[in-house]
Length: 281
Figure 1 (cartoon, one colour):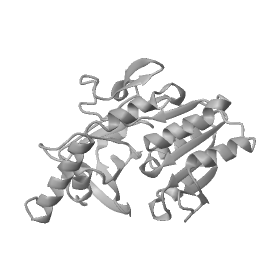
Figure 2 (cartoon, one colour):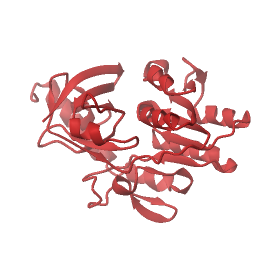
Figure 3 (tube, helix red, strand yellow):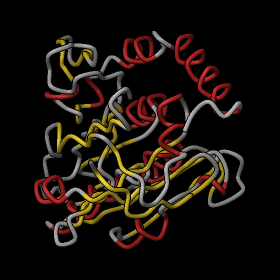
Figure 4 (cartoon, helix red, strand yellow):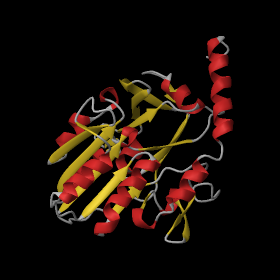
């Protein structure tokens, strides 16, 4: 069992959990993820490790309540336990000094860029971070991102905070302003990552994305998380999650992410109904 040491409500529907997991904390690297299972009947939920503290034996994950399992997880609190936390999984992000790096985080993709920015800066890169959300109240981890960045640019879709527009618009502005970029790394919604890749493509700026397809066993056995990269089939759990954005078939990825959307809606409706009538613990 893995104890939740601290829970924090970051924004509406967005929760942060500090979890005791010494073995994972000791081995984790930027870009890796864990698979969480709430109880023995629970769904396996892949979540990027947003922070790891080796000396304290803890990892941090951030979730957005979207489906039945994340709503269930979001109702847990400090002192509760998780049946399973498996990891670290996936290949660590390749760290290289390339000069100036832009780390782009959208929504709950903001926390995962924290260890990336920190690691890239530690080896000598100048790190520019662009973070964005729909509205001001959904902008999270701004101070933490600033602590590991040389510059931070914030955008909101509605203009309620920072610059109005999308993170891809801000990236375009930086490029057109003459910034020499060695690498762009994006984490967040698939549509956002696709938009970022299209911004950098004409300039031939190396761009990496951390993919988030449907995943089951996370060991390369089931093949559910397969994606097409450069015309080849890759399994995100063992070949990724980082891939060259200009080689990813985003249309296929988006299509596969929608496969179970109706089943997911029904599961959430049933869960909410049972919870409303006091039939769940």
